[in-house]
Image 1 (spheres, rainbow, N blue to C red):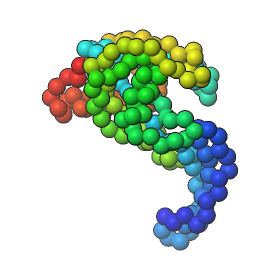
Image 2 (cartoon, rainbow, N blue to C red):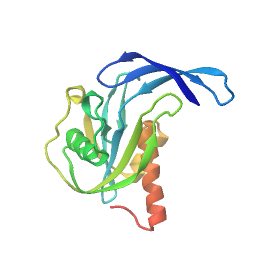
Image 3 (tube, rainbow, N blue to C red):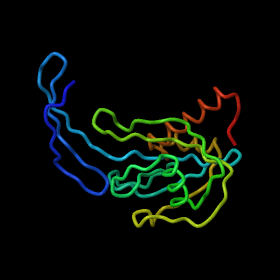
Image 4 (cartoon, rainbow, N blue to C red):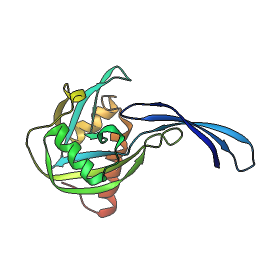
Length: 182
């Protein structure tokens, strides 16, 4: 596929939207609407068998949702994923990780969005004050054991696809490495 022309139709501090005219392999023309967002980091804080979750109001849904700490750098900046993960963990939960393990990468919505997520397992945790952004002022946190997390998924209390996919990456890591992460 070849991009013929690209024009930005909208931008703010978190994303841009562009429209691309393309030529397909057979020569026929087409169009793509693309949401460009910076890559994000998602962190699974794990202590023994407990996971640390955050809950916040998600404006597009009009609902409060439980999920793992995650986010992007301000002003659409691209930041080293490991540095971003440490910052997001600290900002949202106040936790600092002695060890961060890269679990993999997730594509958010590759049919229309360029954003990718880097997933980390955070262990050897110490607590400190959170450093939340203004939009996160209503955020709540809690520790849940794995059984409770899985129940929350089944009850539709955790519906964030990135959090559910990240938990799957954790389970796959444990199965392929032969050890339970703690």
